[in-house]
Image 1 (cartoon, rainbow, N blue to C red):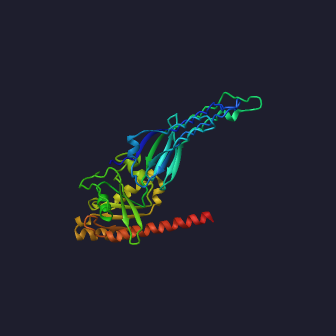
Image 2 (image 1 turned 60 degrees about the vertical axis):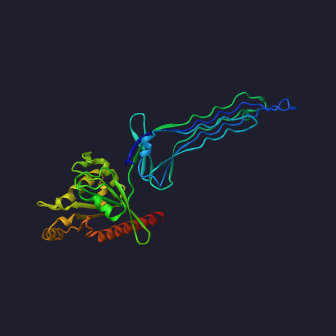
Image 3 (image 1 turned 45 degrees about the vertical axis):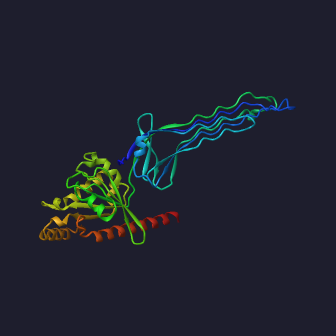
Length: 348
């Protein structure tokens, strides 16, 4: 299945059922009076977060979602049946934008929790039957309410991955190799740039049964904040991650400034969203198995001289991965603890 992170759809709720015009007809009761029942309510269209979905593929295939109408009221004071709601399942991290007639849009829902629901359009109310309109001066009303019309909207869906760890870096930095080495994910791996065109998710399992979700996010080039290369397709997914693991391939460390690749990606992140500069980041030079021992020693000494916190790993060979994974767990745990304390202070 293809990874689809955007879709445009049309939704409409059901119309309410019409109220019934009826009169009681029984032997020996010549003037039974009105007894028309109410119409049923039209169905809502509800979006619900499912743990089983990772993309918006289904919404790209099916673009129209219409709930059923409520049933018409019946005689003998029998109300029409309410229509069932139409539930549309979406993955966690789905943003829903309502499209306006003037071409603009506004954010209507941000679905981030499993089981979270949002009612996109409400079904029309059922009309009242004629039994409600009997008065002392009108004992046999011959009218009933029509059901209310349903609502309709055009929506744009956007998926932004929710992951604790976002693995970023220039093209061919070894991000796919890293996520395949630390989790059960099996992304496409090849020795050329832009192998990964869509994010891959992997789950790291801790000894205590805890899970850490990591996203291998496609590489970017200079100018990505303006949409160049994979551009915003990459950057929008970074915005939802808690901790960034920033990889730089060993072959990118040549030149006067071996660590310039880190600065290039950092600059693109800040230009897209200044808040990303505050995101915890673990930096690592990957593919050290391709370096000579002398060159590796030079890089380590230069990083220390510049005061840079840089790990040196080989995702392919497994060198340095155990310590890097330990740091992922530690930084994430510290961040969650800080967020929990902040929430408690706000509630106090």
